[in-house]
Each structure stands twice: as structure tokens, then as C-alpha cells.
Length: 193
Image (cartoon, rainbow, N blue to C red; front, side, top):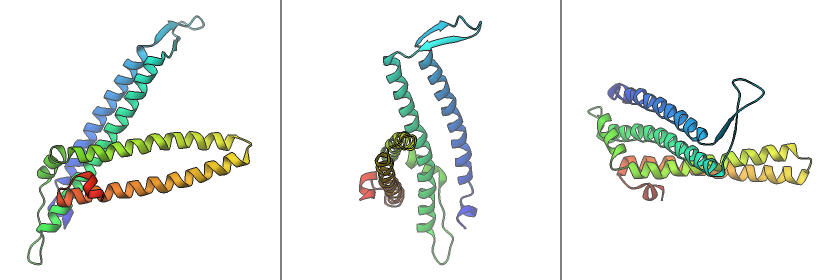
């Protein structure tokens, strides 16, 4: 009933796919612009080869660009989730035994882009921090696997187990917080509490 009554919700995924492709192209262009700020020299071994060296200032800038785009991509995915949750809440709470409910996709998009923008940004910021920790956790896991030290392998396994639990817990709380925000209109932190 929900998908039949709110068939327009499928358009949201299509529109945000276009937004995602645009953001991906902007990320590639920004990455190329950031890399081109470094010292680039012609390679003497190849007529078309180039060598470049990272300047520490531009390395920090590139790290900032990567973290920023991870946050933006996470924001877009979380915004789609929030719009679907908001439509589902509207549909559920307008339904009764006599009639099928209604949900306004446009109203949900407006709520996601105005009133609850900060809540979605907070949740996606937490997702970004998790992605960064997950990246470093994978590096640590790989270093432990390549090591001959059994204690390092056990410690890395324990840390990975604890991090996986924490990551699952935070993902679950974020989903619940978005649901409470969509249902009651509370902020992200209040919805998580």
C-alpha cells in the first residue's frame, strides 16, 4: 500500500542519483585540482611521463577534501533515508481502518532540506567519523596480518571486534534517531536519546 500510495518516492532515488553523479564529478575535479598544486616535473625516462611530489600543505588540503566529500556523500545517502522515513511516518499516521493514508514526498524533501538539515548533517558527520576510523582500522588489521607478532594479531582482532560492535551500535542509533526525527520532529540528539 505504501509504495502504491507514494509512488513518487521512486523519483527521489533517481534525482539523488543525479546529484550523486554530479558530486562525484566535482570530487574528481577537486582532486585533480588539488594534486595539480604540487610540484610537477617532466620525467626524463618517458616523453609523456611526469613526476610529482606531495607538499605537506597540499597533502593536508587533499585530506580535508576527502573528508569533506565523504561527509557530503554520507549526507546525501542519509537524506534519502530520512525522506523515505518521513514519507512512511506520514503514511502510517494518516491511515486508519477506513482509509489508506497519504504521504507528501515534496513535504518530506522540504523537511529534509530545511528543518531537519542539521540533524541529518550531525548523523552524517558521525558516519564520516566512523568511515575514517574504519579506514584506519583496516590499515591496522592489514599491518597485524603481515606481522609475525602473535600478540599484535590478537590485539588487532580484539580491537576490530570492539570497533565492529561500536560501529553497529552507532549505525543502529543513527537509524533510530532519524526515525524519531521523521516521526516527531525532534532534533538528532533528542531523537537518539
